[in-house]
Image (spheres, rainbow, N blue to C red):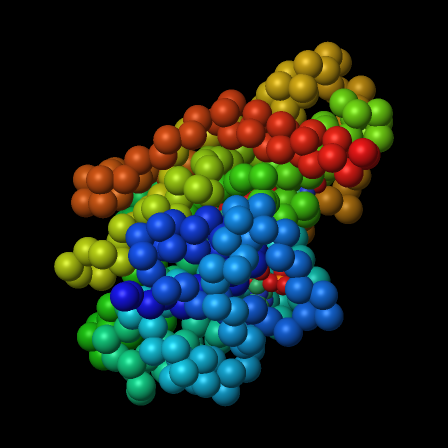
Length: 325
Ligand code: NAP
Ligand code: GDD
């Protein structure tokens, strides 16, 4: 039986990936940091909490990572743990860097020293492209990150590539564009909108407070994207792959579609713009070209933009309705 270790297993992507790997017959270890109240909502939502073996560890604590890997001896490590909220990375740049840049370095050193055959997946991001002046990004596009988050992720991207070159490790960077789901953290704009719209529909709120509505993103479904993670780890040679839909929409488009899915007219009257949600440096638009993934991994996204928005609004309506009972 193959063994996988997923860091960040209780976030958005972790549970989808864990479910996918469990279905493939993997033994799944899920690394969780020590928290006062660990939140198992996302693994419960997918019905897999009791199928994962949880192990306690922190990306900023090298010793904990050494212990975990030497105790579990995984065939594959999917490094999804991160301080992943771009906005917060200006408030906590050191924590963001320690978690997102040094954490992967620690993991790579454990692999290099103790389990050199373990394959390593690094959760890289379209944020690394930043505002590079290009309209469409592929694996060869230049990097121009705009946030402490993007910069921390760029370090991890390069160190993973460097350990392939230097030590022959098997490391893949999945350069994933924004992907969303009902399990998305509530701070991210799509979930903030789907939850806000559901509350307005149920009479629990009247307004959603947001920042820059003009920003454009290439939004896909997290459940589709974890398949690409797995597929790149099964290739003969390690590689870096852009994972994206190739279509981009603005925050405004997302809002309009979400209100429309809930059957609410005049969406603009429900929006408040608050500059505190604007960022010190913004990435205006991101759109990815996933041709390499399509060709080599035979991967393509299944869920379309409107289906994704509807899925998120419906899930929030259902959840809030159940809470009301
Ligand atoms: P997420 O929901 O924020 O999940 C990240 C997980 O990492 C959380 O469960 C978090 O736990 C945990 N974590 C944070 N600091 C940690 C630490 N020091 N030690 C151990 N665990 C820690 O992120 P996601 O959306 O699933 O994304 C997964 C990965 O892909 C992240 O690395 C993200 O940066 C990257 N990525 C995401 C997207 C996207 O659109 N979703 C796109 C490109 C790349 P707490 O919440 O308890 O802190
Ligand atoms: N979060 C948030 N909250 N964003 C807002 C708001 C708001 O109230 N109002 C407007 N936005 C805009 C942001 O300025 C940004 O341009 C866009 O909505 C998307 O913001 P997020 O949903 O926070 O996502 P992100 O694109 O910054 O980062 C996500 O995607 C990256 C991949 O490109 C995260 O998942 C990152 O971890 C990931 O790497």
